Amino acid sequence: MRQLKVIGWMAGLLLLWVALASLSAGLPTPQAARADSGPLVVSETPSSTPTDTPPATDTPTPTEDVPATETADAALRTVVFRRTQTATAATATAIAAETETAIPPTLTAAAQTQTALPPTLTAAASAQTPLPTSPAPEDTPAPGPIVVDPLITKEQNLELAKVGDEVLYTLIATNPNSISIDEVSTSDTLPRQLDFVGASTDQGQFTFDAGSNTITFLIGTLGPGQRVVMTIRTRVNALAQPGDQLRNAAIINVGPAPRGTSNVVVLTLTPGSVPGTGLPPDYSSLFTWILVVLAVLTPPGLWWWLRRAQPAA
Image 1 (cartoon, rainbow, N blue to C red):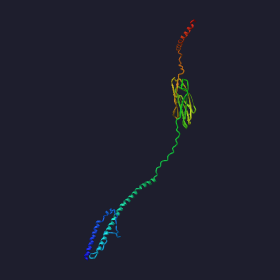
Image 2: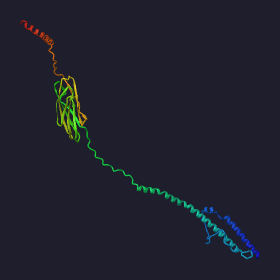
Image 3: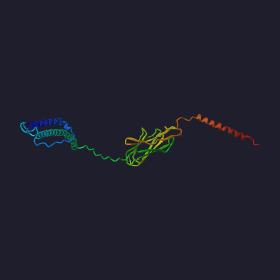
Image 4: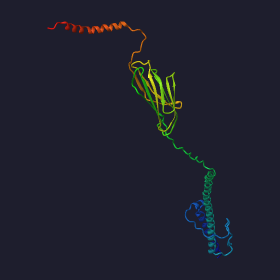
């Protein structure tokens, strides 16, 4: 009977050793347990905190009669306890690793939140800083009427004249605008072959400069559409030579500045009576003319006399 107990006890120890060896060879490492994608089945663990040293069990002494069944049960409970303890540690390690791995995204989100703050601050600063506004457009004055220069035309009563003839010039100043023009004047410089006799105007007054032979009409203000007629009377003097052409034009001014020129009129001089030279008559020329007349009249007069002297048949 004692021998059977010893054999059972030894068989239990051998079975325990085999179980421990199998357990050591089949348990996964923490890295393998973490890489294991399958579900981990954890059996119920005792409420007490597991330690590396298993709790003491009632190991039968060789002198006691311990049944082989109890020894095998004790060995199996020890194996299950160690495997549960190892699985629990691996699970804790995997959870801790996954927790540590999940933390950086949280920190990254926090960093992104902190990085996103400057636009908010910039927006706040922009809200506090007033944006520059464009100045209000100034009222543009309405365009006024377009003003053009006044006009002037010139006419004459003769196209051909001889010494002593009187020539009459007519000047017409016109304001083509819808508004008045101030300080209007006209001027006309006569050729040296013409002597100034007189002048007249519908408005204003005139002056004559004998040194330059120029007549100036001071009109003043020309109303909208108004026209003023001026006349100049002249006479052809002895300086005129037949065939000369006297060209003349008038100028219109606004203030001191000239603003336009009239059309050009042309007067052509023709021969007239020959002026006296102050020398005595040349009688030799008169005798010549008498001889010419006698030479012309003598032949017909002699023929007429001879015919009357013949007796009638």
